[in-house]
Length: 194
Image 1: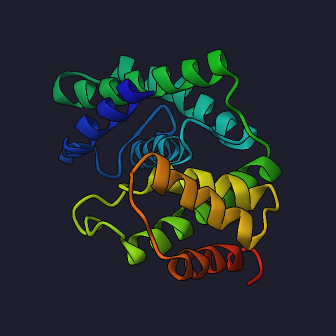
Image 2: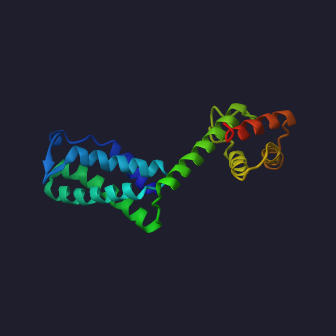
Image 3: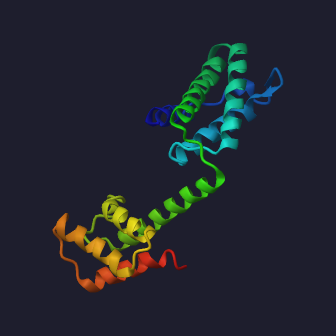
């Protein structure tokens, strides 16, 4: 997946061919094909290598259209759409090989999990017990994983507090006042009660 992400970032640096604005090839609108293809790759990357079956169907249609279009183009225009074709091809192969299609229910769950993880990260970064969150925003992700897991497993405030305390004491060798840990655990627990 990293290769796809890197190639996509390279692709975003390429300007869209000026002489192809508003053009069609064999009934395929090039700007729409470009937008749909890039949008789906962006969604694939944003969803950590997952797409829904409807999105995958559109991606495969884009792949077929890109193959058609590239054969008809030349020069820089062919290079631009050929680059996009390569990225789409890799994305389709990745999804087929790794069975990364998700239904809408699973997609919603993935979004919820990411949202919870991000909320806990913000709580921990605002607390910032060692004063580095403004430099390294994922410094407390090890604690985040523990707190997140405890929260998702219906842990109590005390369970969350103990998970954080044990990590800070054993791994970071830092003593934090119990009152601070209780406040942080309560904020994390509130995520599911709002």
